Amino acid sequence: MKLRRAHFFHSSVVLAVLVQLAFAGAFLADAVMTNGTYDALAAHRVAVTGQGDCYYLVRPSRGGNIGPPNVCQVAYSYQGHTYSALIAASAPKIFYIDPRDPQYRMNEAAFAKGPVEITGDVVIAVLLLCGATAVTVAHQLHLRRRRHARRARPPEPAEPAT
Image (cartoon, rainbow, N blue to C red; front, side, top):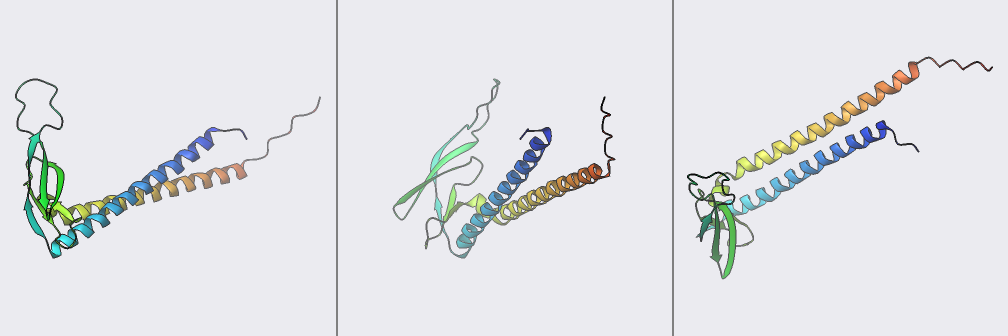
């Protein structure tokens, strides 16, 4: 089978749709996980204060005034277990932990934005699904148009034998 430009185009469309669907699935999974953690912490939580050092994640390349650090590595303990997190330097160093299941934990800033982040994940997932649908529909319309154009073409005359 000879590979033509159309094969490359069709495989590119399929790849684009699969990538969009994969990202949509990832955003929906993130929304579900965040929602589960948020619901558990909203029902019952314990506030724990963290301790840690702040530093630059990326230093500016040009000289001059560098400014305050932008990232903090914070460690906090609860019931004999030590956890660590990387948070923004401006975020409070308070973490919420579910006393019934300590695997559910979140810093105070993320907890405050929980419903907004869940909604954002769902909106992005829906937009990706709509994009995948639009690409598929446009591609199918293109194929249909090409099929009809090919059928409507008059047959080419045969060359006379000499």
